[in-house]
Image (cartoon, rainbow, N blue to C red; front, side):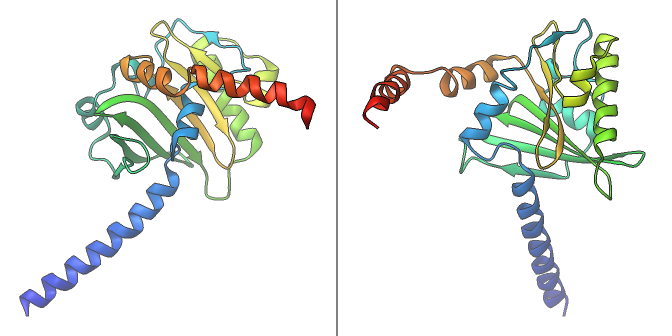
Amino acid sequence: MAAKLIKRLKKKISKIRGRNASYFIQENVIQGYGDLKAVLNPLPNVKPVTTKKVIAINELAINDITIKKLKAKFGAPSYILKNDFNIEKHKIYFFRDRVGFYKLLIQFHFINNQFFFASTRISVPKGISVERKQQIVKQALIKYTGVTERKQVKDFDIKLIDEHNSILFVFDYVSFYLNYLADNETKTALYEEYCVATDEDKEIEESKIEIDKYI
């Protein structure tokens, strides 16, 4: 009897884990190398604004995040996703939180256990309005710079950089995200591998220009 009960419980836990995996795989903002390039070189057409304050998430400085400090600050993760079938040694720690009526899903990205990127999806039960998004952007600008530009708030054109070269920026596509990019050896190695154009890339681009007259 006990053996059958344990077997049923294990089966139930397995199903729950499977559903959780599907959800967090979908929520992962770095699915593959295209997404990785986008976060390593964020909003290239937006001029960065320098801040004298250290960019942090829940008072944890972006340039100082480790797995140990993450667990000490946030507790046990809601889920740990291994994405190394897409990107080698890529692991994401997910945490859920709630601030007033805002629901937060925070994800911290590590390569080979070294942090380089975090993203917070902010939502409300009936969908987050443009006005609320603008208020969040305005609040971030005031917090880190003390001033706001009307266009930055209206278009969510926010790209803040601190003395450690950590970057805070916004993605507003399907969902609304506050994103945090560290400047460390891991980020630099990834950038050099995936974002710096190789000679082959340059040749391909030059060929596109040359072949244009034959099309």
